[in-house]
Structure formats: C-alpha cells, structure tokens
Length: 251
Ligand code: SF4
Ligand code: SF4
Ligand code: SF4
Image 1 (cartoon, helix red, strand yellow):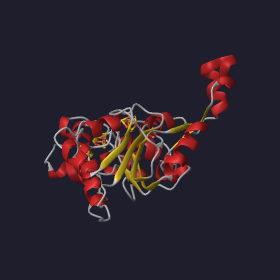
Image 2: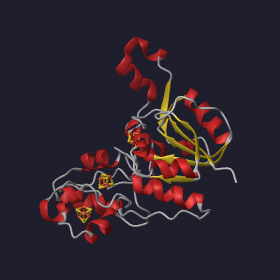
Image 3: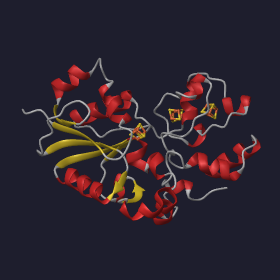
C-alpha cells in the first residue's frame, strides 16, 4: 500500500511550528518511514504539486495571494490541519484585527500604504474547511506526533478538553496566580503543553487558545483582584487568540 502523502506549508508567520516538527529528531526517521513527505518548505526544496492525504498549514492569512495559496492546498488535500495559534486564531499577526486595516497601514507606511497588499489577518477557517487544529505558539511536538498517529491508524483524534490548570495541579505546581499574584490564563486556556509556563514559575499567556466553555468573566474578576485593569486583561487575551469568539464578550 502506498504511504500517505503529506505536505507541510507556511503562510505569514515565524515558521516556528514547522521548526517544531523538524525538532522531532528522535522520531523523524519513523515519520519518514510511515509517510511520504512531498512538501516541507523548511526541510526540502523540492515541493511538487501532487494530491495530498494530509496537509499541515501554519501561519495567518494576511494577503489575497495567501487566500489563493490556501484554497489551492485545500483543493488537493483530503485532510487539512491548521497548526499553531496563527493558523487557528490569527495569532500575534491578528492582535489588532479589529482596527481598520486602511488606517493601520497609513499609520505605519504613510503615503505608501496603498502599495501594501495586506488584508485583515485571519485564521485559516475563515477561508477553507479545516479538519483539525493543533494549538500552541508553537505547537507541542508530542501533540503533533499523537495526531499523526491517530490519522495513520484511521482513528478520530482526541484532544484535551480541560484547562491548563488541570495539568498544573497534576504536576503539583504552586499556583503562581493565587499564591504569587502572577497573571495567569491557565484557568481559561486549553491544556496540551503540560503546564509548561507555570511549571517554570511563569503565568500562562494563553498560547493554546481558550478551552471550551472558558469562564472569561471569572478570569477578569480574578485578574482584577491581582491588580490588572480590564484593558490589560483584554490585551493579554488578544495576543494569541484574538479572533476567538469567547474573548469578544468581556468583563
Ligand atoms: S503559532 Fe507561533 S510559533 Fe507557530 S508559526 Fe505562528 S508565531 Fe510562529
Ligand atoms: S498557576 Fe495558573 S495554570 Fe497553574 S493552577 Fe494556577 S492559575 Fe492554573
Ligand atoms: S502554559 Fe500557557 S502560554 Fe505556556 S505553553 Fe502552555 S498554553 Fe502556552
């Protein structure tokens, strides 16, 4: 049986998620044995335009030309997976997506603003059907490998549906928010990173995006108690997942 054909693509981003895949050093040979990687911008220069079983796409759509690139990838792929905060929520590029784009470009580029082809930064699902999403900025290697395993076995992927706090408690970390007044978005952020930041005595910045049924109002309440004002809290929530519906209602 032929091996599944896989492509890994980038739109506008830092390419950190692709790098995270390349960092699967111990597993790369196994991956190469299980799938036929036909496109991988960071790792190979030969990227033929063949039909794909699985396309992984990182990055934010910020130009009309990227809409066309994305649609072409969708067209030739059976399964399309958004990887990282940029692809799933617009990420840092979309932090100010609510601000009028024309005005923003004029502030930055002045008289040359009209020459800049950028559109409102948006996640992939705004333009094409996305079958699955991997969260994080960047994604976690372990989650990538798990998802690939599910797909190769023909199983439906299962993703965490609980917050970072659950992982943090499991590791018996001290709570940086309650015990040390460090802002932490762990209560409203979906798990999957093994509470990476609180485990190193930092607050969670929410790079995995919101957990289902995130209690945003309670997060505002607790963070205000720790000395932050509404604007600071709103900005913190908009760094990685600015387009998330749940962050549109606040306080
Ligand atoms: S999600 Fe983060 S690491 Fe991944 S491409 Fe975007 S900015 Fe880079
Ligand atoms: S440190 Fe953050 S993630 Fe950990 S339990 Fe406290 S609020 Fe939750
Ligand atoms: S703790 Fe929060 S900010 Fe840190 S990696 Fe996990 S989800 Fe991202």
